[in-house]
Image 1 (cartoon, rainbow, N blue to C red):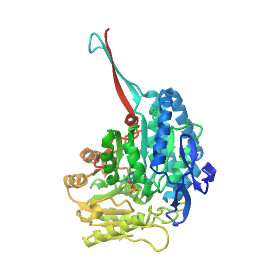
Image 2 (image 1 turned 90 degrees about the horizontal axis):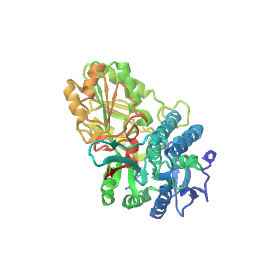
Image 3 (image 1 turned 45 degrees about the horizontal axis):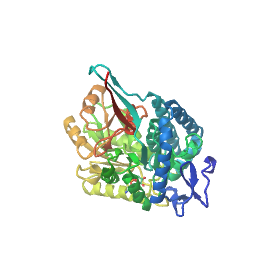
Image 4 (image 1 turned 135 degrees about the horizontal axis):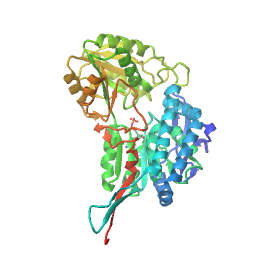
Amino acid sequence: LAVLGVLPMNGAAPYVAGGRWRSTPNTFAVTDPATDDVLAQVADCGPQEAEAAIQDAQNAFESWARTPARTRSDALRAWHDAILAHAEPLATVATAECGKPLAEARAEVAYAASFVEWFAEEAPRVAGEVKSNVAQDRRLLTVRQPVGVAAAITPWNFPLAMITRKVAPAIAAGCPVVVKPSEYTPLTALALARLADGLLPPGVLNVIPASRQNAQPVGEVLCDSDVVRALSFTGSTAVGKWLYSRCASTVKKLGLELGGNAPMIVLKSADLDTAVRAAMASKYRYGGQTCVCADRFLVHEAVVDAFVERLAAEASALKLGHGLDAGTGIGPLIDEAATFKCQERVKGAVRAGGRVVCGGNKPPGPGSFFEPTVVRDVAIDSELWQLETFGPVAGVAAFSDDAEAVRLANEGPAGLAAYVCGELGHAWAVAERLDFGIVGVNEGAVSHAAMPFGGTKESGLGREGGNHGIDEYLEDKYLCLGGL
Ligand code: ADP
């Protein structure tokens, strides 16, 4: 962290608002989930700091909104370059806080930077429309203008990319942002902001870490503020629903990326090498702690034995360890409660007739580890099937008929990601019938800055990234030029 210049002030990492790095009376501890060691103390922002940061953002708004798009683009491009130039320290801080293997953290730095690059390119492309011949005495046109101050509440599982995916389009559109990062990963967020120092005008990027105790009070300030015109949240469905209702009083633009419980359908026509590769990429990335990780595997009865055997062989070969150690395939889960949840889900599935093929336990010793696990013959009404586990546990059930697989996949309130493996025409036919925002066909790692990310049903509202990611931060203003 010292490498990035986020030096402790009075023994704690400061927050940044209005271009100034500041301390707070209270601090909270950030720990390494692989060792339970305290990494640092961090400024604990409360409602007062949140109000002030919103004001700092508002003070920056008018000038940033009027700044030529090319200048905003250049600033984002410079931030992108700074992120890549500091890829190694950024990845190291992310791994220390969130536990993901260093190779995954490095990949996340590139993924996070790709949003900054993408929206740097989008900034000068924002354009309205002109209807020149729909009425004789007037001309009708639109201009697209920044919505105002934006707020972002972000999770710990992608401590870099979930910030850049929100902040880059907001800044590109002309909106200053107040970011409330996860209490598990504030140092990564502060390091990102540090790299923007001197590149973005004061107040355009404000980062206010808060302890878990302050998350809701700060959330209330962000939701209730009539200065904040857009709020973007990635996190649990429960908190997302609470924010949705809380934002009603100010009728904010709202982007929500909530939980998934992704099915992966392995059709009879699937190439098993491809299916197992897709399953490994999707299920065990960051130990299963992404909202697009495959959770429920629906495998055709003709291939289920072979698929399970090969998946279990590959999964159990993943080495558990500290994310910074070479050869680590799975780091710790984010906390002890996460391992407890995995354990309970596995036990419940076994009580309902499931069979553990590999893993299934929390190994002894420090750190919140859980073994890579495959459970087959999982009952459809078990919690392992019905609920997102957010851990390295694959639940497998067999099916005999494609229509039944589609019906089971579409069941439930989540609609973020789904996967299908099979011969291309066969898989395509199934993919079209899946009620999800994202479908991977013969591929388990699908996210890309150029494409829209988001869910149907209770998985969220809106899309991030791609051509439409900037829309969340723009208003279309209709101008009617009369008297012609
Ligand atoms: P997770 O279980 O993955 O940590 P959460 O939804 O609890 O997901 O957290 C995602 C983000 O939402 C974090 O930044 C967290 O601090 C924040 N958060 C949690 N509860 C609230 C709340 N009531 N109001 C606002 N933000 C919250």
